[in-house]
Length: 252
Image (cartoon, rainbow, N blue to C red; front, side, top):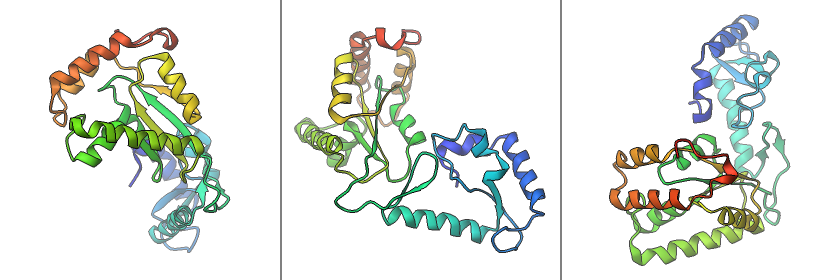
């Protein structure tokens, strides 16, 4: 099944035409075993960072026709390599095995914005299997089994302590993953810069959504129980947001 970041591409007319071309190029035969071909395979695996590169996605030098079994085998080899502590870089190349004493130097991204802006959706669409996500709401749900943004007050300090510990591990790079995604509100510039410096983040990603849209999403989100509390948090976030370093908010 196509991963979220590639679904639009696989549904496009351009991909269907490219797929037909590759079938014809190889006369409908699997290039690994000679059986009837079924899958057009990307030799350099697709990633969120190369999905817009036409040479990777549609270039015939990166495409080969395979039967279903051979296609499965190639992806199984890739998954096994990852399970055995190999990893793939942003270009889909296999990199050196990581020993227990040498954790991978993970890329760290801070995704920030107002509640209801779609931070978690963005991360889900861009992360890879095995990436780590640090989100206070998710940590709270894990230890309290409550709904979204409904942490029992007696567990808030514990959830914050858990997040602090994860930040320490990230700062030391005492983790084994390709990317770390930190999800937070961070309306103030100094908060963002302080966290970026602390965890040595590679990038700050702002989810720019208008206040009205955030309110609409929260209001229609059945997983959020206390809507009034969430609306107050949205209002507070927009009042505190430092707007000057982002070129303005849409419909602020």
